[in-house]
Image (tube, rainbow, N blue to C red; front, side, top):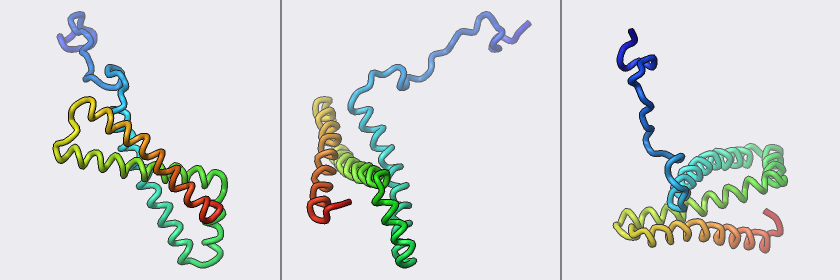
Length: 140
């Protein structure tokens, strides 16, 4: 005879899992929290790329030219744009978290509003930054 807790036991029933992504409806607050964590990872990887660039600059003209060619390629520009957005988003959302740590903005409408401000504000900030860069130097 099977033990009462074994899978072969007829009395065992499926236990519910903890509520997770499959249970909750996606809301902007949840997505901004996940995105904040993801942009933190992107910034860590981007910091390694910045170290690569600084190392190339210190190594001389040849390595620096290779780095500039890589960053100046179409894929490199997309990566730069993504890194810029991750930086802007993480900054704005981090400020949002500081405000919340001070005890403000916990009412649901405030929370939703600040979540959208993080998203829209980061896009506006990145577009402005790239317009300035492209207008001043003509290329990224």
